[in-house]
Image (tube, rainbow, N blue to C red):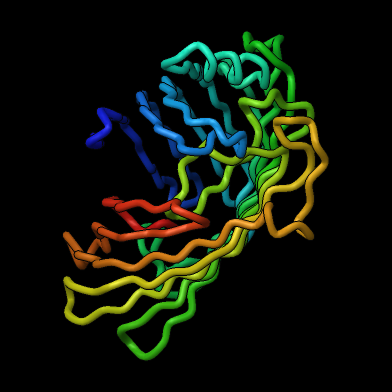
Length: 284
């Protein structure tokens, strides 16, 4: 992926299902460079241009223990750095501990999956609970914990529409500011708004007009809470910590039998936050 801001990312991934789908392996590796231009960096009122460099490797193994329930383990290794184009913005990054980190971690995964298709589900649901224990003993810069819980459900309406709903939360314990939770909804830049914890609800309406062409209409809202990068205690009762999102666009199915899709969307969030997003696959 490449953008007009000279940002890029590249990666390889694999989803493997074997032993009559009793076992699953998901693996990925990637790298990227992201150039961000903030008009109000972290709410400081200061303009900033930052460069984020990241590379990672990830693997997850799942074993079907009963029915649609899976139990497994996962591991991740990440090297992330962030730098600013001018001295004053770099001082802010250094002061707030946002310069990046190298981390290695292991975790446990619990997964329920009754979806009819893992690429583009039209019925069923998924529950996912997992953690990553990052430890210095594994070669990382910091020791901290991250927990993620996600629930997705898919409601078919007639034969040409699917209402997809996602609830997700991410919680960190003892994490450096660079590993705090960020708003993940369409229209927002990862890392622009940070806090210890994040939760959101997201509704994605998928409408088909022909076997290949359709459209999407989505809306959601996220909340950041816990400690923020300024060491303030924030909560969802303050509207300043709520982040709405709306998006709409076109869906094109590359291969109907495999439900492989491309989505082109315009998204908008709080204030002047907006984006044009071209992506492979459904968001969930």
